Image 1 (cartoon, helix red, strand yellow):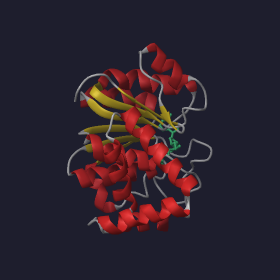
Image 2: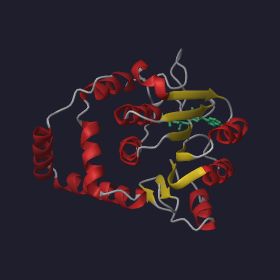
Image 3: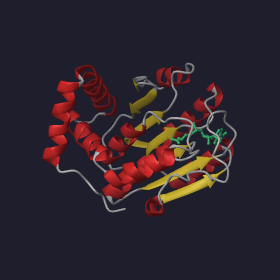
Length: 240
Ligand SMILES: C[S@@+](CC[C@H](N)C(=O)[O-])C[C@H]1O[C@@H](n2cnc3c(N)ncnc32)[C@H](O)[C@@H]1O
């Protein structure tokens, strides 16, 4: 997908105009960016730059907008995911929970812009209330064909597939949980993924507000249980 982007000057002018027109929203936008920068260990300027880059990617945005009418849930961390992948340039990413593929599409768009890296996803479709696929669709149907070259999708239960997948990959630079949000399954995934994370790698999880799995896991491993909204974001010690 060839990026169709707005010029940096127009984009910045748009930001300034928005800040004056909607100061409350601008403050929230900046605060979210600052939190992500702090928890993911990134310069704020990079977070803001990559957010703008995504916002200005007209072709990707238009593709998603055309598809979103059929999707009846939201993935609020999509922009944060794009930004993190652009900024840390991971080579190996693992995510659990694909459904229509909003998170996968954002990760793959960022990998395409990086020109490197592979996304390994696991999904057991249509077992979660609220994340059922539209009739006739398969897991990740939203992901544009042009972005599928860096994607390995496995269909099945994360409890069956994740240990073997992690075993074959060696080190992982970014792990995202968004499958079965039961306490037991979240801890199961974190406990398996964390030892495989490269030094400086990122552990991320959607829906960390549902119970204390995120907080308990982070406390056990001496990590800060940091969040941007309900998206858990914490970085393993060490330099990449
Ligand atoms: C919240 S949705 C994922 C949304 C997705 N990340 C996105 O941004 O579009 C959760 C997905 O995980 C799947 N799932 C639920 N339990 C699972 C399990 N035990 N193993 C693998 N996938 C599972 C659900 O069927 C659903 O497709």
